[in-house]
Image: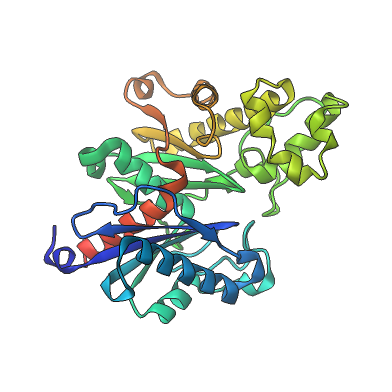
Length: 344
């Protein structure tokens, strides 16, 4: 560990999401000072100014919980949903969680750094969760391993790790696995319409494996196959989509059909990844982790069955769910900031 890390007091991780912010604190020895999920409203739908204030509230809340103040902060690790540049500038095309025009080309990282006066290290939420998943699984061997992570939430976040470091790409948008086109032949039912993503693409992974994909694409179709289903009696498709997982945990046929399509889509995505990264491990996180053990293990097994690997790869790779899934983003953001200080 470098002298700069030894002199550091704490690094704070801030995970900005579509509905909530979560926060954590990492001390100079690499120990997390918070063992539980600490969430506050993100308010991103109200625009950048309100969202920045909400992040500052999350920051002050986690510092109060740990008995610290802002003077103790050496750096901030920030993650947000993508697509965004490696410097935290939201895509000019917007994103699922940043659809308001004022978010387009907004420099999120720089705005937060200007308010705080300390370095802010940016990653998209997929990269942050992937980094935490990687080191949670491999521990001391993490710096010599590679992995691919898919995090199923409102959208589908992803992250690529090679030799223990996030692969960012030329603009910081590497690992946007949700927007990778996947083969749909045999995945869609014969009479099922082509899925469409909020980003404008047809048949990408996020159009299947996300809460938005359930609401916009999968649930409307499967309700036609199960007329009179209880989910059709909800106030809206958005409300019904949030209940699908609970129905799947009770072995409801409609819900299981939806999650089967999601698992198959992730398997096809990982098959593509196996040919350009050939990782040591594949991780799945997000909403499927926040379910009963039986359901999530069943889901992961179906993802693995639908990931077509070579015999040599099967002998060496692992499939795993992301531990501490609801805290993975904040913890990964903090780890990324810790790594940045270590090499500065």
